[in-house]
Image (tube, rainbow, N blue to C red):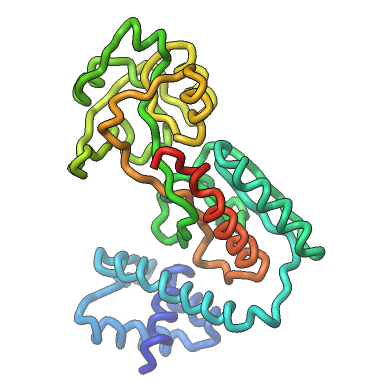
Length: 303
């Protein structure tokens, strides 16, 4: 049997919750869908689905295979879209969700996008939560951290780093800082979406990974709230370099332990694999990539 058809049948069974529903989506008999999945399992020598009279569920191997299969099918759809790009014009409404901190980098792209394509509209929402792109109807999200859903497509736009900092008043009262481990005894305020939660990760000058467990009296998904608290001397913060750069230059904040560099992060464009990559999404991502490359030094001033 055709391997690509079998792969598609398997993904549709999972997406639609059963063989019959997948068959209707693919205009294929239930028996043929079952045969394709069985052929795939025989080829792999592993069971991908647990079948009962009431439902179909993924095995552990099936879950890993499904994650990769959806990526492969999405890549093929994107290749087809690129091949037909000259025949396609961006049109319709593009719904975007962007992290609040990076609106300064996204806004110019939105303006250029609207001025370049007369048949598009943009619905832009900013915030500090992990939205469900499919359930909430977004075409695209621009985020500073990886999504929790591994089935989403992630396009890296630019790299960035945090800066470990505090106010001069906090440093005078509680400093100086000599070792990373000393942070365990300080009030460390944290961003809710930091991927390592209360474990702050760094690399030293030799490139050796280092981490420290921190605690404090403020956890928030608002970068501006954390910045204000740091300026007021509440505690030590691991803040995005582009967010605290002006404060550091003006002396309102002080950089701590510069021999330890916070691990590198990525600003990403994220979109659902189940959506065909339309011309409006592809064109906007292309502009994002171009602008991000031009503004890399602003996005990552402490590289």
